[in-house]
Image (cartoon, rainbow, N blue to C red; front, side, top):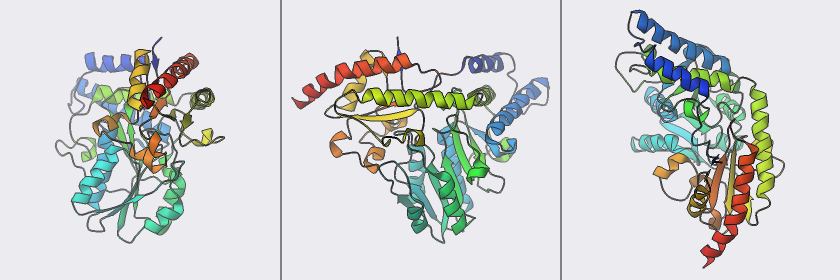
Length: 387
């Protein structure tokens, strides 16, 4: 039995999504900008997907801009807002443990003359409203935070952060990276005070290469892809109709019986953490005892004393168990995890941490197999490392 526990990196698509993508690619393949019947068929899928996504967010379909994925959505939000507000100010606030698709665009903006403030987080991965309030300034134009941290599963109090921002200055744009949160939590951007929100399809059993940006009606940001004026001019280029159709269906399926799906993930997480306690020297990060339900339901970060994470990862792979040593995207940015440093993981454990992540397809038997393999491998690898 293969044991796939790297669902924060990517998920297996729902079978219904695969069938729909195939149908759109092979039968209903018209360009949505074409005026004939085939084009109308394509346009129907765009409209249907926007309606399906909007229903999950309780927003207007016009609030949805389809992109190539989470990275583009984050770049569009950050660079587009910075360009639109550059005459108002050049100060941006974020946290110290954002995903590279937020961190790198902000470094680019910093090189372009913008000033970036990086807020610290506590051992649970939380940002306090007091720290945020102290960082806000008259020239602040944008605050960008992730809702669920992709490495440790910490959940940030975005509604409280939004209230702090808007009380200080309602014109400051609040962007939330919800790539690990969408599908796992009920999200209503308007209720949460979110202006821009990024989502990626392959994190909730949709296709890769497709995502969306939620943009509130009052938000003005500059598009940075110009061309044929598709999607009301906000993101030009012929739309990825098969991907968009698949994303829309995946969103609908993910939010059917959503509470049951979420509760099942939390039960798996609770069970896995209990079993991890059987392994000497294993420490669960950013999830204090009794606080499982205040973290994301699908991510568990565990440090194993005296064992190199990459060595343990490949040893598990030999057993048919697939996990991650951090963010999948961080493999392109080698080095010690900034997230683990930010939450205060001890120096000797920074290179000894694995991420286990679950999905609606994860079975309890997979968790048992992983724990039994860890109980066998960790003591052996720890002895080898000490030599």
